[in-house]
Image (cartoon, helix red, strand yellow):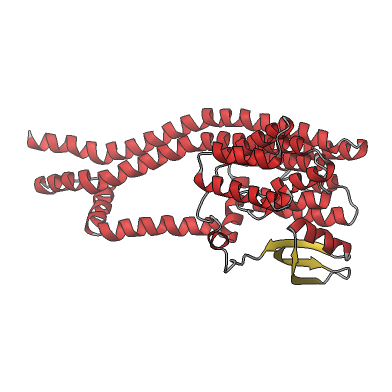
Length: 407
């Protein structure tokens, strides 16, 4: 049994918190709903077992790449379809993986299976590796007897998520690298090149334009306070990193993405694709709609999309259709999302139509990342031209004047 803390809403609207033991968070959510309570959140209370060193360590120092999870889900589904037992399949997978941390977890999962635990309960012990989406899909599949099919869906979901992230990262990493290189080159010039030229200008008493004086002044300040400047630069990076990892920072970064030209449409399309595909996969696996929305809300990273899914959770519990929420938030979800969802609810083909919508938006993201590259490259060339022009006007111009003085 695992101990959880939970937050619920009573029939009168009053919220309450508590702690309770259950086999997993989904079983606890079912118990609470059976008591007439609306589940807001459920989180595991981590307590290290005194007599079990492995439980104390729990391999929390490790990390599993999304690609490793894709291979795990795909291969496990294939082995089960071929007739191998679950325990035997896990033993084979632990030997195949090159990630020592992941191998240790697979071995522990196999041990739990051999002791009579279900796969979903065994995986739920490691939420950092197997997210709620994964566990919910497996639990629903165990009840329906379609475990290999569910593992295939999980692998497809992870694969699409991985592909989506790669495309977006690929579109953004090039301009980030170029801007970083420009900043580094500018700093190096200010520290090493400008001071040498400044001495030359002073020796010959050259008359310098305002832009040159400003650059030389900044260079002198950086050289004289190099330690403090570098310290402030590193501190600024650490503070910004910590800020954007905080709850408030994630909210601001979500807002920036939704209001930045070229990135706002990409953000809407990518988050819509993620919401639709995740919801489709969970619904097709037999997971209840309220639980589906709860899990999808944790899968999505953008603060504003999470808030909409929390609203959807409340409204669906009150008997309202999901499409009404999407239609009410057309600033986040394109009109197409609400219409597709409404048709799916009316025809009983919600999972199929949500999947088609997800594929459509994934194709849109693919095209938009290509278009973004064509827009970014000219913008970067203009930026480089501006930086070069500033240095040419401020440094090369006075050098020509200096050559005339020497003649």
